[in-house]
Length: 241
Image 1 (cartoon, rainbow, N blue to C red):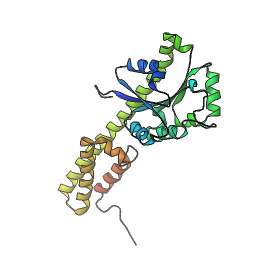
Image 2: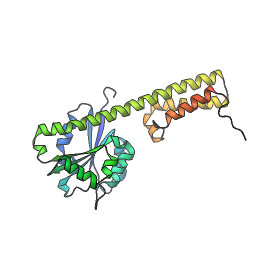
Image 3: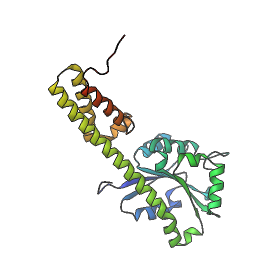
């Protein structure tokens, strides 16, 4: 992760941030993490989607103070749509669920939740349980939060590394296409050159636009491979009727 760039961790919940100050405080102790609470309501779906787009990682927080552990897949579940959107937008490796204010935060309790609300297992990296007793002991909080910090850091480093690789690949392909067009000028070769130069300049000036256009890590490497084959074989692909 680049020096000086904080990881924006959205904390999405129907509870206000005043209900989980302990979580915000623990995350803030890591200088690389910037926690950003967001209250989900029934009328702010557009603001929710925009907030998710500004995050590197997301925590879906639910408190038993609301009465039930109804996160997903159950009657009157609170976060079916939101959990799906977080997973689809950020990737399930960059989403965690925290269930707070429980009476039981054991592994058995976690397994019961995952079995009864299977969307959590599919849409998130995991669920972490915190009881009222846990929060009365700072050492317990520190120990239970440690793997969460590790997951956040590892996921964001992987994302940055992947994007850095794709950016470098885009620049190299653009240079190769321009060199090929200068050496063997043709409408076809200049079309390759202009397309890749545009992508390269976009990475330099407006990287988020790449994601908005759907030109992600899954698209650019195969496109670069096809381009490399095409410029190395002037008559490829050869079409016959």
